[in-house]
Length: 401
Image (cartoon, rainbow, N blue to C red; front, side, top):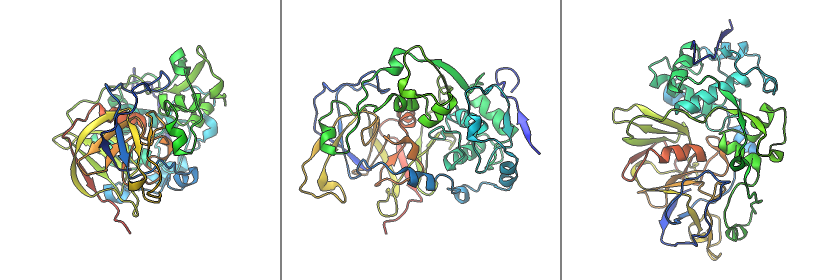
């Protein structure tokens, strides 16, 4: 039987290491990039390259039930929930009444407005689904299950009424989950520059900023650009200007995450990072990309040595697998399209760290060369909670074959 719930919440319910080089500080951030300012540029070197996984690779790994057995989730209600859901991505049209009810129970290989709403709630509550796209996948499922466990609810792979009510409370009781945003001058400001593939050509740029307005808006609202376009009747996002209105996920103004982070735990098998309180409570959950069986992330206990925002990347062929050692080194400027994104957290394991990405749609659905990658918005949120000395534990990591 299909159950619906009104969403009237306000009323009824690569491995890197710090390097001594100091590039020219004149390559400062622009208004096009949402980053935190650092007092001086810092450079990190990495044994992982800046390869962007293919869309095909990410899609093949989008929904495989990752981590269910490890977590012990109950999947008995999933098939019924999936059969009951009739929504599709075609329902993400610009005329939809987004104050309408969320279709419940919700789970399985489904898509559409209800999935999008659930993703917004999870994002606001600090249980990140990664990139919001209106499609159910392992990232959304894992965030849901861990929220249920955190809220002392039955840990299933299905969202029910009790789960959504608890999520709404943790998310700050938003009155709307998709809101209308009037674009500002800062929202649409460039410059937007096509990023070359060649690493030495990248090194010639002042900044590895956004390539397009659609990319910038996707990062600003934690969403896939194609999803944003569909929410707005297929509008060409790159053609928008200040003063134009846009329907967007209501991720701004989410409640601050409360509690002091005692340690970080990273699961290789399930592909997530947890910021934990001293009593074990999950303060923040995010999907991550970790190393493959060929280039595994480390196993064991380490600690965060430092947190660097807006880092430069020191391209060093001598520590890169598959790159001739005799190639020249290069320093690549900071920005959201930098190989390590907008934040680098150096670990006590030499050459390893936690960082952002230039490919948010692949997080959780691809592998790295050993580093721990998050979306830029998730790693920025994490950086506000973590400081040097924070313990980090890697568990159930793949071994090198």
